[in-house]
Length: 340
Image 1 (cartoon, one colour):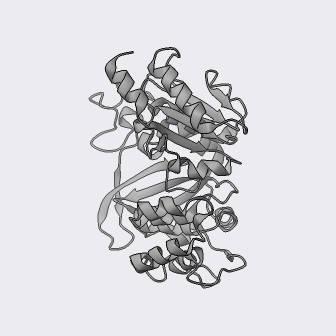
Image 2: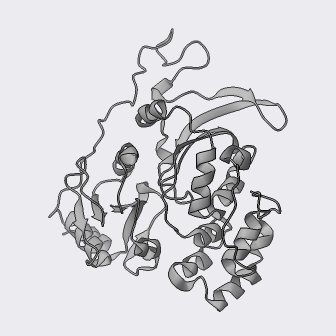
């Protein structure tokens, strides 16, 4: 083992967590583990931790995610059934120490005792483009086409002021850190303004850590980490959140539901500043109604303020497009940066 390998082995293990259905509750608090560094992008990870069961519909997304990890790398399946396309993945049972299991695999990979996991997908463009167009540039004429297998952004009228700006459509999720686990949306964006929403896959039915996610979105990562697990009821934490003034960074009326609650109200309920409601009433609300016209940050605040049951109901009300077509195109049109 070289000196630089020894240094790497002594550092916290960079882990990216791919949340599946029924993920262990402890997955939400791994960022507090002293030996692990839970990262927000697979490009910064050495270990891919698949927590819970991954539905077949999301396996193509997992493949893309897996191949984004730099070498050397390894995959662990934590309370997850075997995945045939990941034959080298290591199973971790409920009774195992997940921190120790990750550290042992990381050390084995660094020392060369375990081979780095190979790519799943072929090293080729996701769709053929060479030779298309009059100059072989992959497009048709001056605009349009799919150069390098990616759809070219085309101008469209902005829904707010009717200015013609480039619009771009791509799949986002299901492993984005600020997305509810399992949720995949096909979004059309102009800049960071959402123009169209199609639900490709609904979120999983588990609680997640909405307060921590909202605090991270509001620029309070230390309070977000402190809120994980069963610490959300900590009176000191609630006081610190109140003193931060975070609620005033949330626009009034953002993401309003038929029951009258908006993101700020739901945030207050999470932090104990307002009485908790028995349930959120989505009525016939759709994601198009909630998200279209919002900038990215505001849209993430809306998504993360909704409890899983309400969000799933809203997804049922929303446009799901042609699911067969959407799933068939997922390998070629999902943007790598949107997968994590």
